[in-house]
Image (cartoon, rainbow, N blue to C red; front, side, top):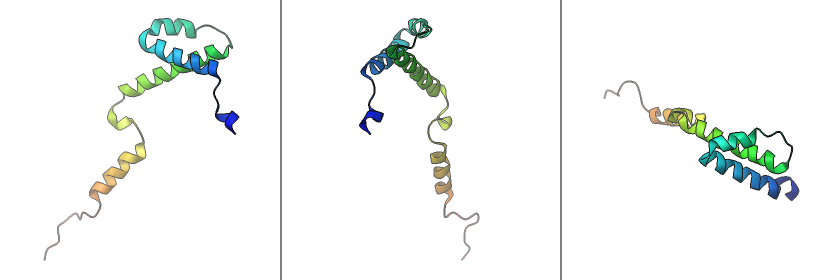
Length: 90
């Protein structure tokens, strides 16, 4: 069971490098990611770069498109809970 959750050290190095290089030098990251190879470190590099790009795309979204869509609908429902359309007339 532990083997399933364990990440190869070379993959992890590549992932971290891909993420960091994509963050600070995106042109270089793009060139390195275009290399066609099956080395585990390069696979990690590509995945790290892709992860950074996904996070950047998500940051550009408006707040209502971020996060869990069910949480915002719950807050809308709870705001109107126990409210009548018309006030009671006593």
